Image (cartoon, rainbow, N blue to C red; front, side, top):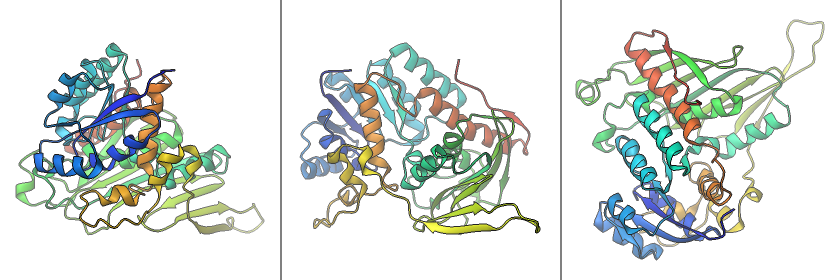
Length: 378
């Protein structure tokens, strides 16, 4: 275990600004630096949160020699290049989802992580939400019995987002829907059939050559008796935001369909002489489980009133972002470094979860033809 505290730089403040204050108060972190190409945002943020070390480029962060780790929260198509720069500079790297957008990039990151000996963690919020942790606890207690099927979906309307999102293949940003299914089943997706659906306006085709606002995939997992279904949509679909997962077991099933509503828990009744068994269901509100985190960090799992309505990152101080997952992500990344072990969502795991979506889009573009999903475990 390391004896010193870590210095961490957060790169990208539009979303990354929600993480820097958590690093600031983590008991294993000493100094926090921030980086953004928007100088006005960089200085406003630094002033409000009392962060003196400010950088306008990742290159400046790396040249400073001050940091042990970098957390990348930057546009999707810069993830692979910047991750490689951080790892090749000999620093630990955390990166928001997805890990990359091509299989070649995934292979390069896995190789760079292995060569550097430094940690890589994909900061997948969906496996640290209150809802997912509820499912994980149920599985540990054996409540589901044998898991029979899994379903996930991520619905989001991305109109008027930055230009690099326009027309993005839905499955290139599908880890929020895929990750909970593979994590709870402790499985890897091995092959996929995926179909595109819907019609998208012409200008959205141009950037990526993607004609589909919606893609739906069936994945075969490396447990031969288990498969999973995932739907992802980005445009032209009237559905409120949702990162959902459904787990169907022999004895119990858990469904989460609406972002701000409770989970639905179904339990199988005993076998009787009548046709079919009774199914009992109830709505359950998952617990936060702050006891799994340092007290300083756990407070960011909850809503907190804050008077500064002009704060550009009020959501940080209110807490609860992505259903309480942010403190868990920071804590796991930091502790994995301190304890000199792999993080939970390490380079190989992240590559497997991300490759599933990349291969799904490939299948959709081939009319649903089977695509084998490579393994990164070797």
